Amino acid sequence: MKCAGDRVVQLPIVLQALDGHVPNRTPLWMMRQAGRYLPEYRELRAKAGDFLTLCYTPDYAVEVTLQPIRRFGFDAAILFSDILVVPHALGCSLSFEAGEGPRLSTVTSTSDLKGLREELDSSKIDRVLEAVSRIRADLPHETALLGFCGAPWTVATYMIAGRGTPDQAPARLASLRDPVFFEALIDRLVEASAQYLIGQLKAGADAVQIFDSWAGVLDPESFRRWSIRPMARIVSAVRAVIPDARIIAFPKGASVSGLTELVKETGVNGVGLDWTIDRAELRYALGAKCALQGNLDPLTLIAGGEELDRAIDALMEDFRGAAHIFNLGHGIRPETPIAHVERMIARVRG
Ligand SMILES: Cc1c2[nH]c(c1CCC(=O)O)Cc1[nH]c(c(CCC(=O)O)c1C)Cc1[nH]c(c(CCC(=O)O)c1C)Cc1[nH]c(c(C)c1CCC(=O)O)C2
View 1 (cartoon, rainbow, N blue to C red):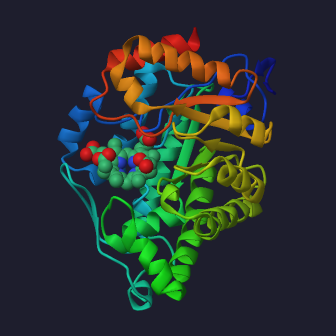
View 2: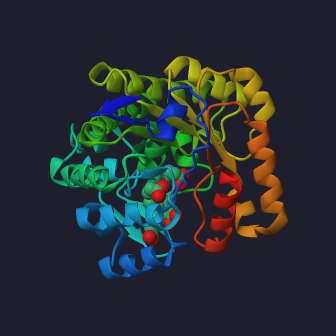
View 3: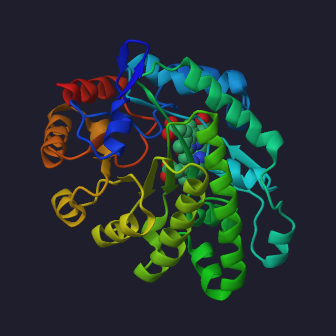
């Protein structure tokens, strides 16, 4: 709590939870809450013509970020951008083909890596940071603003394959065949991601999330080496500059023991959980060490109806008394009916 004049200003409830407190109601936001399930997003996307134009034009990025806040009043806004902005600003070419996902120039050897920049191209990043400042200025005080980046492992999988793949075999193979190159790529991404998050926090983000969407394809030892270690280095580099930085890690597909180890090694304030995790087992393993964010199956939200109600009730019950931030277990899908999102919000808020 802090005082502004004679008014007492409450910390936004998402930040209360990240500080380890149990807010008087459960905070709620959704991964990919700005996106194709919203008609107002589709309209602006058609006007911009291209996804990256949305990301790099502050007027658009601000507007798209605010759309789900205006419509639903979520407790957090997440910067509208993409994890692949980092390789783009390191010099990789990047495009998003309609219906096909991202395409990047590949980085598969030490000499490819030498061709990239050492530091992020500020002509790209500054536009994202301008959007961050403007979003913070436009948001209500009680709504937290989240910045983000991809975890080095997940970003590396796209750089090595040049696209998404079902099991990230190209990156896994590269880590086995050429560990010297792979380690150097991860190092470059650790540095760049830490600088990027520091920039976002300085520009006005209240907390940041690190998305490790492909953590689940790693064996336990590789998970330690390529997911936990790089994230721990990012957290300490960010906190060397901003000691009280609030950081959430989302290692999708991680096991209970993997998550427990990650929290211990990184000191993050919160962990994102996908829908496959055993919530009771996780709570038991983690105790009250950090905030728990998640974990409704995005398909349950598409299905709607009584199954949705039942799943929400079970989730709320399992995390009762915990520093819980309600979210999905992964991003909302484009085909999700808006009425189901409204039903979910009403049920969580009771
Ligand atoms: C792996 C990953 C990416 N991007 C991201 C991840 C990690 C989270 C996850 O696992 O989903 C993160 C991301 N991407 C986007 C955000 C914006 C903030 C939010 O609302 O959550 C965030 C946080 C917008 C986006 N990023 C993308 C879109 C769709 C672009 C469009 O409008 O056509 C949006 C709204 C494109 C994107 N971007 C990426 C892929 C694979 C794709 C294509 C698949 C798809 O279309 O959903 C890379």
